[in-house]
Image (cartoon, rainbow, N blue to C red):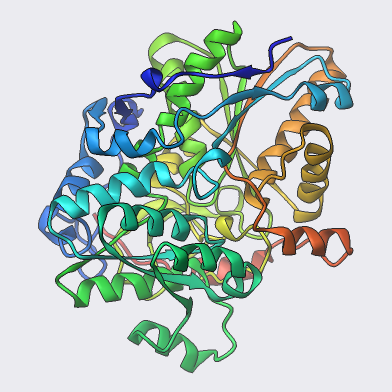
Length: 452
């Protein structure tokens, strides 16, 4: 039985898929954080290069990938599609389980698919330095690598709890030449304000975004770079799904369900959006399932509303599934899934019924990761392990119903630098944590009052 489906470099997608062309209705406008009025390109120019601003609002179905970006992507793309036959056997399921393995990238996750593109467009506009935030460190590592390749400086604000939980990710960033600071920090006004209110703050992605955006706004040679949430970021990731469609065709299969973990939404969207295109344009019936932690349940417990992208209210305001911009999640080990909101594009598809959402506690997630390790031999990142949990449950459901079912998921990164999390799990030190409903309601009470 063939288990690995490999493409050649001639098969790397040469165009990104822009799902905005096929949405059931236009996305709500992006708003200025001060005026709460729709922004224009000039409003975003202090933060992003113009080419990315144009991609953010583009309605074209496809956008060509620059040759310079493709040349770097060839370092690891195309990535393999693997059938998890040993997991199937262990589960005794009639389901066929496939995973797209993005852990083969130089920094071990899907994040370089967009970091390379963003660094290229910033370099082309004459930018000297990029700032960003990072949770678990996957995005920070990817941007540090891309900045190194294109001769840019890189400043990373790493959520403080992850800065200490995952020290080797910051080592990777530093090795590529990035400057890494635990957030909140004393380096910015927004960081100092948070520390004055709570000196023991463990940080959040919202806080780290505030610090990174502040530095970009105060320095003309600096722009801000985001690793998820925004339309152009999701679009850059669609190389994953475009490759997977070709590889499933090689396997003679069609996906019944596509699964991915969700923080801001980039790896799930990267795999799922090309399948969404098939659903709406070709009449396919593939289910698209987004998986999030119970400790940060923006899609399953949040509300669909306009909210700030960061804690200090400097980033643009977008309509999304949100827990509130001042939400500070507990220090669960899936650091990349601790954002207070989700991509506006995914939120719209979720609210319109095109995307399902489920949430899990972290102990059953790590149980699933261990089963995957012991059958397939790959250690998944804690974020990716959420997808594994949903896949196993889906396969067991197929077993119970006696159904053949083709399940595809994105193994969005490896967990070789997350062993502290696995040690905590193996030592029985992890606890399940569901974010209290009263805390959700308290955070939602501070949403901006938008009148359009």
